[in-house]
Length: 427
Image 1 (cartoon, rainbow, N blue to C red):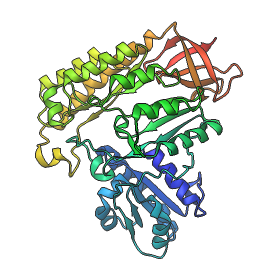
Image 2 (cartoon, helix red, strand yellow):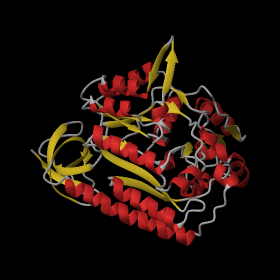
Image 3 (tube, rainbow, N blue to C red):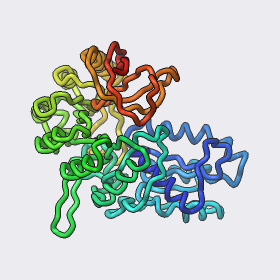
Image 4 (cartoon, helix red, strand yellow):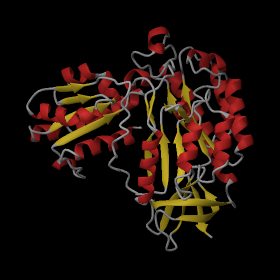
């Protein structure tokens, strides 16, 4: 989401004569796009501010701004305790950035953190900041209506509002015409995408089908799905289109129904397992990834073992794993006690990571000897003699160049693997 937001910001500023520089020492304006979802994300921002402090001392005219979720949540702290920040803009205030920059340049602190019930930036053509020119993101909605107890997103990004499907399709078509061959549709919960105009209703499965129909050579991904909303009908829509990638990110967060209820996730362990079973039945070649939180409020050893057993049962292909960190203003911060000691959280997280490493390696080993269509995204990080791309299942694959180039589809036979990467050759 932050990448997509940064591209919108770049477009708005470019229309006012700004240009992007690769050298931070040349910049007259530095905007730090922030996230408040996890405590370590916020800590990285404070560290980043410290690393650029010397630039402010060298150039008194330099404008430093903080934008995004953290800016909205911590506006007073940012402006009052750190004098190097000149402007603060929340995620719905990006159109106001040129005016905010002008105000900051005049020597005044500039702030706009108002949330909106309408803003989707649908009419803005983002400046693509992705380096490969092959894959890109398209935001289809903003905000979130799911009030998960641990999550700050509804408070800093506001309520759900969906983009006009026509503007989404236009953006995807423009990307394809510009040479892009893969698009990821973004939303806090894409399954809840809803658009209605003139009596015509468009849900996410209809939108997904329309995007897939732009061109069969354009791969389509999406993130993120919510387990309570993932329907069989959506899975069947995916099954009808070869260019809709066979990968679903389905955050579990916990394998314990008791903890899920405390988290206000609106599903049980059994419901989640039923959704995994449906994916396996309707999309047997689909990879599944997840999110897991270790050490949520009141989590017992039994609850933790339930998370491990769910992971083992599901056989997740990969996962994003975190220690619980209390976010101010959330329901958990207001109603629940963060009572799991840090050392216990760390120990449980390490167990989750160790298990997922084994599951990821097992997933990759199953692919040895198989042939996959891979979209080439660029050169391997380790060698210019090898290319890198991803399978439909979102698995990174490395293989010798053989006169191919980014943007091409190739058939690759997998010969070996690491826990993170498939290694093969073009056939």
